[in-house]
Structures are given as C-alpha cells and as structure tokens.
Image (tube, rainbow, N blue to C red; front, side):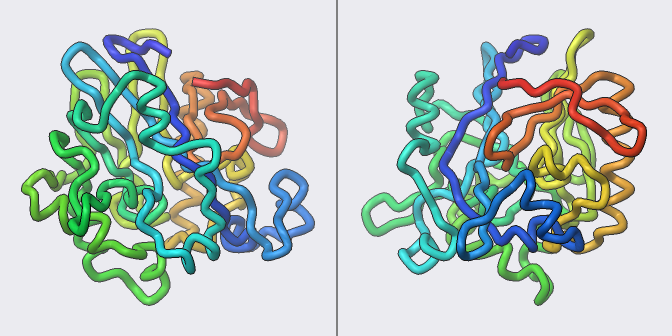
Length: 282
C-alpha cells in the first residue's frame, strides 16, 4: 500500500494466545466465542502484527512483537507459535535487515508490543535494531517504570525488553501527539494505558490508522467489547467512539494488530453499532 512517499506493509511476527475473557471484559463467552473461539485453556488466537513503513530515507517499524526471549514456561502460558512467522523472517521477505531500520515507534511497552526490541547476542542483550531510534510517550514510560498491581503483568520482562535500548542512548521520549515525520502523526489515547500512541499515516486521498490496543481485533469494533486489561474502560469506550466516528466519516483504513484473520478494515455506521464495510490486507 502506498500513502504519500511511504510504502506500507503489515508484517506477521508470530502468533500467541490470551485468555478470551480478559480480551473481552464484561462480554459473555457465549457472545465473543462466536467470532473468537477459544482452546481448552480459554485462550483465543492472537496475531502479533507490526507495520513496516518505508520511504527513500527511512525504514520505520510500528511495534516489534513479543520477540524470542521468553523461557519455556511463558512460551507455554502464552501459546507462542513461530512456526509460520517471525519478525526477522517477515523483514527478510521484504528484503529489509534489522540493521536498516531507522526508527521504531512503540505504541506502548506491554510485552506483546515491545518484546522484540532486544535480543540475545551470545550472553548479552542488545537492541534488535541497532541503528534505530525508539520512540515512546513520556506519560507511558513513566507509568511503565512503576505500573500498578493490576497491569504489572502486562510489562513482563520490561527491563530485558527496553533496558538495553535506554542504555544505548537510542530511546527518545516524546511529549504528546505530534507529526513525527511528514505525513506520519502520533495520536494518543489513555484508556488502555497512559500514553498509548497510535499512528496515523495520511495523504490527500488515503488515511491508515494503526489502532494498537485501542481496537486490537475486528471483534473490538463493538463499543462494549473492551479488554479487562484496560486501566480505564469508560475512557476507552469514549476514545473508541471518537476515533470510529472519524474513521467512518473520512473512510480510514484501520490496521488491526491482533486480529487473527484480517490485517485491516474499513468501517461504517450500522443501525446499532459500527460495522465492517470492507476487509482488506495491507
């Protein structure tokens, strides 16, 4: 997909599983299981998609997946599966090496979005993308350093994932929404976690909006379908309403990070809810 000077691709980094009840909050299993069936441990299949944005001067990643540092215990808990996809493999398919990545935009620091930031090189943890600047919002970084008891588990292996990046001097802390590069804007939401930064790529004819965990799957287009992981679900509700209204009015493409089937959708207003207008791959 081409938007302005940027070529945009959605990359698979692997699959994993999370508890379906946690993913859909107050919505009963009899409803969410119609679209997202669970295994015998109540886990639903999740993609760990990232966005590759390339131009003449830049090669940008939005999020980096879970990575490959989890010990066997956590691989089993989260049903990690790299049999079909990995970040390095997906980059190689597009003839991009990790050393060529110039920028990494982390929507937030939860392990399934930031774990691929570092990797083991022998006995040393090093940034996976050694030439890249990594971007995180200040409000989120401050929270990630001292999370609550409720969301501490979402920052699993935080020090291993981002400590070497900070130590390398390649971590850039941002203060609020901004146009990071021409046509690439960072937009904030705070219901899921403080300082969740979503990415809006726009030219005169097309807008792509990378939803991150505001709308992780197409099932979450329904307003009440809000994750139990969210710190402020009522705030998430209003943020979803706001951005989905804009998406309908301006015909945005919504890139879905965790949907197991669809990379992106366009949406429309139905009689009772927001509905999928078109399913598409990026």
